[in-house]
Length: 325
Image 1: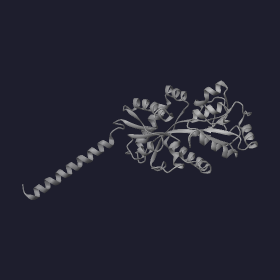
Image 2 (image 1 turned 90 degrees about the vertical axis):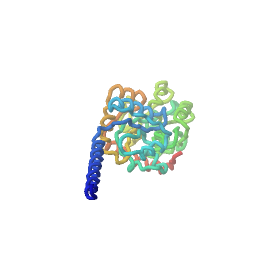
Image 3 (image 1 turned 120 degrees about the vertical axis):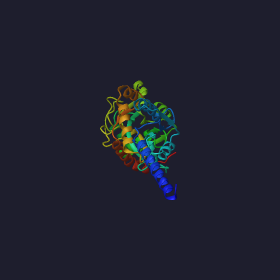
Image 4 (image 1 turned 135 degrees about the vertical axis):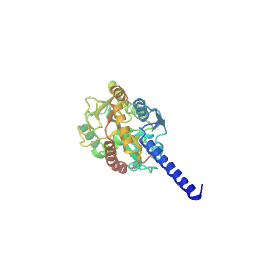
């Protein structure tokens, strides 16, 4: 075979190989998602993030025909950092609550929530409940505000770590009501509740599930719920907004996120399947039993909710001088 013939054969082989590669790439791109297990990164085991991640993973595995593996990591920036650096292919996603984006207002993080992630679905929300020790002589939000204004600095409220939902709910209340109430910080919400029952602090903003037993026993008195609308978790309890502080809202929000640049068809697939999982009656009951109201909705809805939450809390955090622990 002469030189020109050899070169022609080489070119043809290159074209064939190139065509095969292109064909293989197109076949891979056309493969239905998912074709391998999905990794769902969240906070450490035992908390609200973990409980919801496991409930969703179980339902999603059944619906999508692939294992969804919960990957527990220490709370803080680590779960978000892992997902922000993952391939944007839908096989590594994050489930986290407000601390994921609120944390960026209190410290420098290795990611930008608004740029490095694609919102997938609003999983659930849970309100806090404004409760007072049964000896505090108030039975409404308006009466509490009046008492606080008449006795500036005399009332204390219990909260757990910096930026926790019960902390931000208290600081937002102080700011909007223009009252001076002293925060007493605890390592955990349970310790704060114990001191509330014992009368060492006068009020608190715990989650509904953590305080329900004490409400039934009469050890504390509930005044209102922190959500914008009445909650099915606290039937008959008014909102703080309706009971004396218009515009007040502070809730824990849980969402699923994928790395930025994840293809929209993959995001939409994840969204639609998780929404279907959340809509199952048995799973709804399990969510409500742990104090969470399942939501669902579009990726745009979650993204808009996060922007609104960050805007509302940024001034509160700045004015109160809140920093990450």
